[in-house]
Amino acid sequence: MAALCVILTAACVYDYKDNRIPNYLVLMAAFLGVGWQVWDGGIPGVLAYLGQATLVMALLYPFFKIGGLGAGDVKLLGVVAGYLPFEKNLIFLFCSLLITAMISMTKVWRNHIFGQRIRYLSAYLEDAMRTGKWKPYQADRPGRNPAGICLSGPILISVLLYLGGVY
Image 1 (cartoon, rainbow, N blue to C red):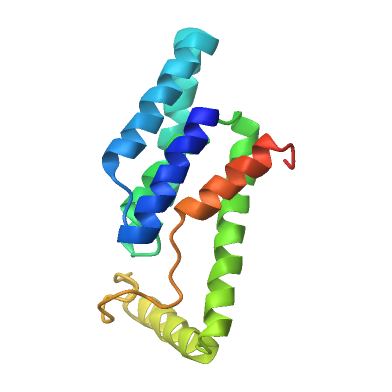
Image 2 (image 1 turned 120 degrees about the vertical axis):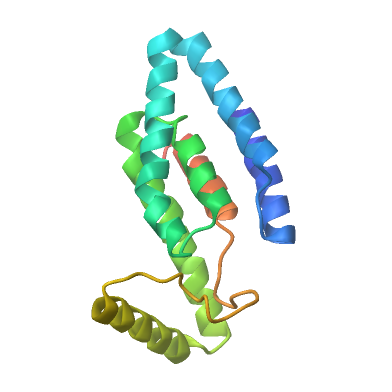
């Protein structure tokens, strides 16, 4: 798990600097996870790891499709979920996304854009209900979102909370 934390730290550096997580870091974490499962649980462990990672990525894919999560975030969440016991995955996702929401709300508050964000979300949801189609979130707003968050940091914090025995 220490090696995973090092990889997650590197992912944070790239994510916060370039707003993207390089695929080679995700692949390194995945290969390390598979290797660890071979060592610890054999073939059943590898299958469990791959199953958990795939399940999490499949569940988060719709959020990627509408632009709510980046591709690197979805892949990183899936790869990291494979490291954890199955019964901890939901708590891991909840903690990661709760930390993300707290950071995002802090940014919204500091930038004084709460009303703007609520109006945009309301119009977005109204359009989705009216048309029956989900368009990419903020497709009409090029550039970096002032309330956007890089998810690698909250993922790392959530893993550290798990390692610290919080959940």
